[in-house]
Every structure is written in structure tokens, then in C-alpha cells.
Image 1: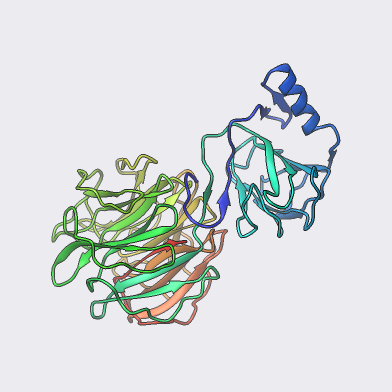
Image 2: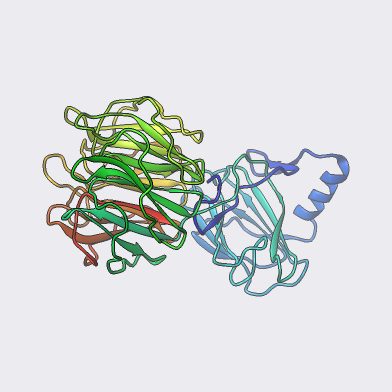
Length: 435
């Protein structure tokens, strides 16, 4: 991920002096003095362990670990206590961390000055990470890692469902970092249905556009405490049944929808929550689509209704540029929802083909949409979805009903069975994460 976008810290490297070869060996590329120092840190004094292939492991100070993530990601728990100068090293044995990364749990100690409420993710192929304990204040500090382009980022911990029908209403429901939906919070702002919502500035959110006796472009900012602000005057084409996603780690985008006729127009959201004027549409104009972030700093719009239901997608670059249509994969449908999971992946789910469905489609960290996964939970459409807990997701509410039922999404993209609804049952709402 790129930029601050939640409360799990994903540190993906910085400019360093070494890289791994294709078979995992360290290839020094600095000056002779620096290379010698690196070789001493990487090899001398460390006891290298057998290749680790499990999904979890506990590290011991003084050891080096080859982590093979060919089959699965690996969560590494650091020692519960450490002394100044304790050292541990991890290396990407199979050059596969870009597909299945490692997550480091600092186990009560600080990591680079952050407390252990942050899990640290490394997700670059061929990466090696050498950490040394510096004391209680800054804790574990990486002293060597590979050169990568991404910046530190975090996955958001909490979420919010808001607005919708019947009513329409402006009521909201917060989602805890454990995926628990809270009771109704009295609505703030213009009551409406079929808005969209996304994150901005790493830990805040914005609801925008929708229908309130007519299409509107009004927006409402959400603080990093989940408090919805009063209306901000609308900018851009008034419309409903659009979608929104974040990009570049701290910015957002509203896109597509209908004014009465389908459009592909987009509106960028700055890291201060300011919505820009219209950007000319790219791709097939459509409504009732969904969007989410992937790879930490990019986005994807997908599915929807044009002259009929479609499954095409449009990728969004980390500069907020929408690409032309990508041929659809999976069941063509509209009025679905999407959210991120697993730090850098996404999931489209539910919707209608003319009949409600619960089918889902995973999105890889390269923006590739997978074939259908059989539906779990109540088939429905006109629902919302958002991230929670840093690396998980939740689908909630929708039609038929309307209902308030929710379905949690694990950090492996697995959708769980129904959770009894909390709050006002409704459809045509939106959701996003914050904090």
C-alpha cells in the first residue's frame, strides 16, 4: 500500500544496499565497507534456521529465517521481550512475498516507534529484512531491507454504513475493528439513497452524491472517529447509483452512475476531502456498479448495468487515471458491493442478475478479477461493503427485505455465513472504512 490508509502498518521497504538473487542469496550492491557491514549483519552472528513454510511462526532473537510463502502468507510473532542489540533476519526464500507476504506481529513491543496495534507487512518479491531491537522507545528497527517503491501504509480498522432506503434516511452504523455492527447513529446531512463512499487521507471517509427527491452531488465528510459532518455543497454532475474507491493511499474517486442516463464521469477526492470538478468518463457508462482499492494504492470499478448487466472492469492507477474497459470475468450483474481485504486485495460480491445472488469474485493485488466463488449468505443486492480490522471486510444490508444482515470477509477473502442484522434494515446505502 502507498500512504496512510488505516491502522495496520504495512512497511514495504526503503532504499537499502542489498537484493536477493533468484535463489535467495544476498547480492551486495553497496561500497566495500557497507557491503562488509551488511554481510556481517546478515550472516555473522545469526543462526539460520530451516526453511519456514507455515502460515504462522514465532521468531527467536539471534536467528535468521528463510520464509517460503509459495503456498500461503506467513504471520511472524516476535519475542515478547527483547534486549538492546537483539537481531533477527527474514528473507524471501522463493521470491514470492509479492503474492503472499509476511506480517510481523511485534507482540507487545514497539516496531519502528509504533506500538503493537500495528502489524507490519512486507510484500515485495525478493525482499530481505534485518531488524535489531533498539530499546523500549522505538523497539525493533529494520536496519536493512530491499529497495522498493512503496511507502508505509496501514489498513483501516473501523467502518461505517450510511444512508439508504426506506426513508430515505441519513442514519449510520459503525463497524468495530472486530467486525461488530453498532446500533443506529442519528443521521447527519441530507437524507438520501444510492450514494457512494470511500476513504481519504488514510483514516477518514466521505459519502457523496445520491438521490433525495432528485439526484444530488452533496458530500459529507467522516472523521477518523467515525463522526459524520454536515453537508458540503456538491461539486460535479449530480447522480446516483455510482461507486467510489480510494487510490494513492490517501485520495479517493467517485465514478460512473446515472443522471437518468448512465455516465462514466469521475470526480477525484483530495487528501483533504475536497471533491474536484468532473473528469471526462473513460470506459462503458453504467450504473449500479461497485469499486474497491487493490495493491494498496490503486482502484478498480466493476460490473454494473449499461444496456444490460455487465461484468467488465476499469482499473484506476495510483495517479487516479481510469483505464479503458477490461473484459469481464464472472457473473454479469448490477447493484453489488465491493471492499478490500488482506491489505492489498479486493472482493466484489452479491448483486442482481435479475434475481438476487450471493456470488463473489476476488481481485488480486495485480487487479485481476477471479472467476465466481459460490455465494455464501443471503442473496441480495443494493447493499454496502467496507474494510475493517485492517485486513478484513464486511458486506451488509440490502434487498430483498430490506435487511440488515451482514457477512464478514476473512483476510483470505472467505465470506462467512449471515450475522443477524443490527440497526435499521435498508437498501441503497453505502459504506467505507476509517481510522
